[in-house]
Length: 131
Image (cartoon, rainbow, N blue to C red):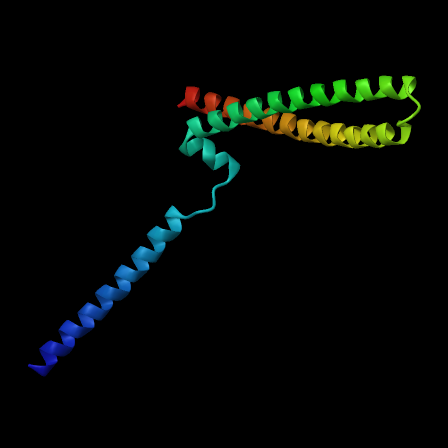
């Protein structure tokens, strides 16, 4: 009888080890790090959403850039005509120029991101047409 109990305990231990190993393996498969190419294969709508979001962000940045450039032009005009508050206006102008430069850099980064996403979307379309 003791022999039968040992066999059952051994088989249960083996089953637990196999179950843990399979669970660990499945967990590893589900949590694989997603590469940029893998995102398109899993969900093309996510890539399209990111592309549309980048386009919206890009448009918002362009509006901010245009507004800032208009403010800078107004400050330049004031600077040319005024003499009382020249230092204050010059300081504000420099602040706006720094902001314009930051917006230009951000806009360039968004343009690059949009170009990459459009290329990935085109590759996905080509791959789907082949399949």
